[in-house]
Length: 335
View (cartoon, rainbow, N blue to C red):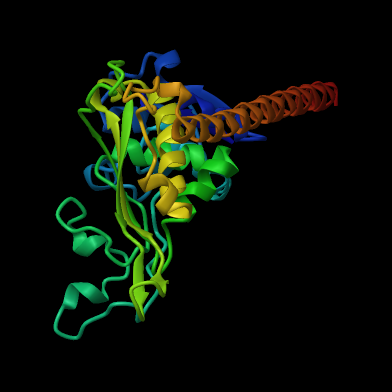
């Protein structure tokens, strides 16, 4: 089929649309057209599918009787779109004249009967999160990671797909009974050694509780435990996806350290025996975080290498398909 990308559709999708011919609206000089004119021109040119991120098109245009199908992304952001690439390709394959399909949306409901309350109708909406007000209410059941910024969620979810280590760090904060973690952009103070910081992790740890039967006979009845953690990425990185991703890996390693070894994490020293501040990268707690982030970065690099190899393979398949199509076309002309 002939597939048209509008001016906001990520170009990276094209390499996964096997068997289709992809053209960008900009290449046709159509990137400034209104939605109605774009659909009309696309139909006149024989396009079968328009792939767009403009969700308003469905309501602005009458699709009845159209010869072109619409596949709509809920976001044009590639880190989010790539997580749903198979669904997008399937939607394009299934498109028919006048059809409308929206993909790359979060459509998995919460588990039923976890916190539904007959007196609170909104609690029965399994597709809502934090009562549809995630900036005001936190996920105090530990069912999910709370993101205060959609950009952070997109970047973090992309890294989770690429790095099993990073994914394992955040999975420790998911599920019933897990500690809360909030991820946000914000200001971060300089390190005690005076160096600037790209991120910070604030952990709230409940200390161990001892039960004593006498002044000398005591036992730990409740070990130290992480109650919640807040990961802050310096807002100066808000427009830098790569540095934000790297910072998340480092800070998530800290949060995981606080969750798995709360007592050790809570008692880490930043000064030596003489009261002198230990350089940032020389502290054991930072060395563990650096090791975790390094492992995550190694996994991301490996994932991208595989992605590139897959892209090369797909490109070769597309070239071979085109070669075979041209050959059949010439044979048909000869007949």
